[in-house]
Amino acid sequence: MMYGFGDDPNPLPESVALMEDIVVEYITDLVHKAQDTGSNRGKLSVEDFLYLIRKDSPKLNRCKELLSMNEELKQARKAFETDEENLRKAFEADDDKLGSTE
Image 1: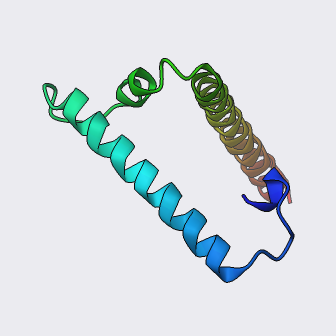
Image 2 (image 1 turned 30 degrees about the vertical axis):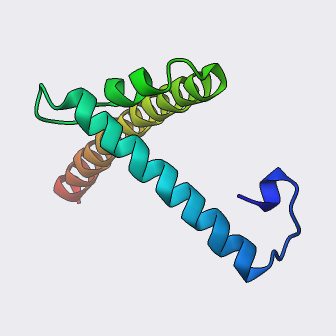
């Protein structure tokens, strides 16, 4: 993550530890706030997190983009699995036909 933002490819261990502490603290704080927001329903949802970052448009846009890509990947996997299953059934049917004619 640090390298992606322009740091050295091999940052100092102290820098990595500091960055990790900052990220963990941020995520923990965000989750606690989301729990408070979603406590009426009794469970967390994606909307709770989107609500919390609604005023930070770059984060909100990136989250929406990632959620959209995640949904596209799910659909692609589902289509691939369905196609793969159909091909397997077709090959099995062909094998059964070949086996009965021999």
